[in-house]
Image (cartoon, rainbow, N blue to C red; front, side):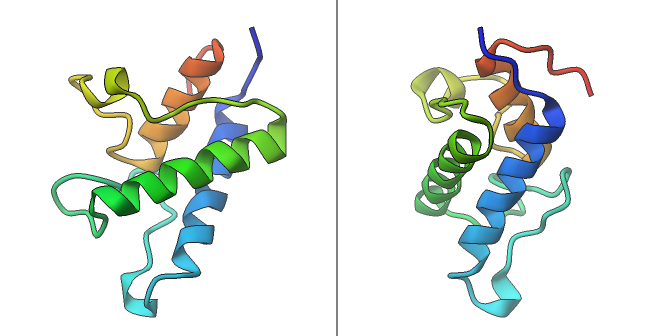
Length: 104
């Protein structure tokens, strides 16, 4: 299995959010804080925006680390603790999907 560190995953997720922010109005920029709400109650993202962030994160992960992952799946959507709730959750999920230890 491929190894992906939490730090690399988080940086790729943040790069994806920066990429999406380039297309958002200045006041609507998504936070780069790892614990800020990405999707769900209190989020500025709708489901289409979430798909854009997740696809950008997949591309950033592949470009930066060579790890190609699918982060959008029915299994991910049906988890009790959503991997899309925050940047931290998405980075931890990427590490999990890569088969590495997600311990921060």
